[in-house]
Image (cartoon, rainbow, N blue to C red; front, top):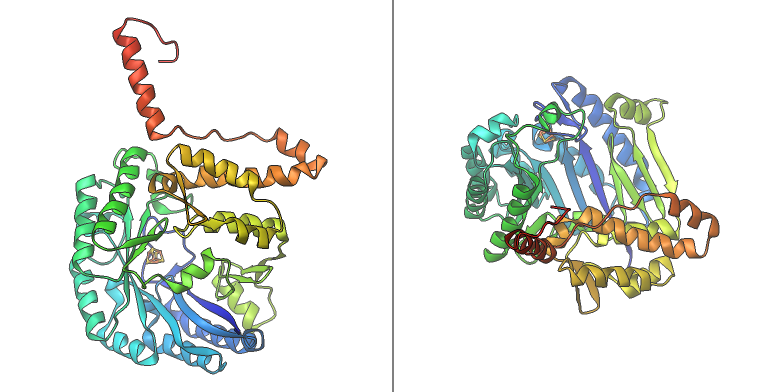
Length: 428
Ligand code: SF4
């Protein structure tokens, strides 16, 4: 079979910035759109020979806010991609859209041009919360956007949600989920709020208005449970869909498949090659249209790093990882990794099914720590064969695994028995 390739086009423009947003995008820069469009068209044309050995089976317009950039420009970019002669008829073509900038005529134009998937930023059904986090739309606009998108012929729509928002309660989150489900999207993404330095909301990171870790964890687990009950199967930590509606483009990221990015901050993964462009609109435009350097990172990765990527990205998915795949990528033993996975299994964090390992919902909650442990298992394996590395690794501090729910319960029970019996437990 011929090689397959996904294209990602970053649209770094927004009508205004949301308080929590860490994506590279700029507000109030409509005047830069024509020059940026020129840069993207030129860049795609120049990349055509590198695209040529493969067929394009996914295209993703992400942002920023592609719907704010306008259908006319998006269709022009799609025409340039079609001109490469490599775009498959069956390709998944996604446009990210915000409810406040989804015009009916634009939706019709996009659908006609071949766009067949929309990803709509709903975030919450609570208008007060939407306002607090700087979203420009209310829930009514989400309902209208869904109706208009269906009328334009879109039968593959995703809604993006965020939990752990300021003043959000478990009940309020349940209401947001229920209202999203009632709109019958084919796909739902639910991300926990994470405040990054440099974003306007970061200064409120310690605010009592924000749900605590336990509350966020409950919200996550209730999302997994609710969406499963309504027919949305989880296929990645934060992604759920009616069977057959997985985001084919995003699957490429998690499966280490090839994709080529365009635009400031966009990343590419082509075989062993990884590269990204500067997170700077002018720097990118000058790089393409002028003589500036728009490259940010550029590296050839080795077997070891590729094996690490396989563990990190594969364990984000419900499909998980398998011994044979790891061995094929890293050409090494899976034993130490499996040993660690068996430990996780005992604690209810991982499962082995039909020869593949994946996390349980409780494991997904701890995925950063758990994946860190798997990487350590991989590193230890490498270190065994490299005495210099072993001494370096031994100096590093290891992060302790959290205790499992069963262990926490047993611990609480043990402490209550000790207290009732009048015995003192120094650690209480
Ligand atoms: S619309 Fe999206 S990309 Fe733009 S500021 Fe808000 S969250 Fe960020």
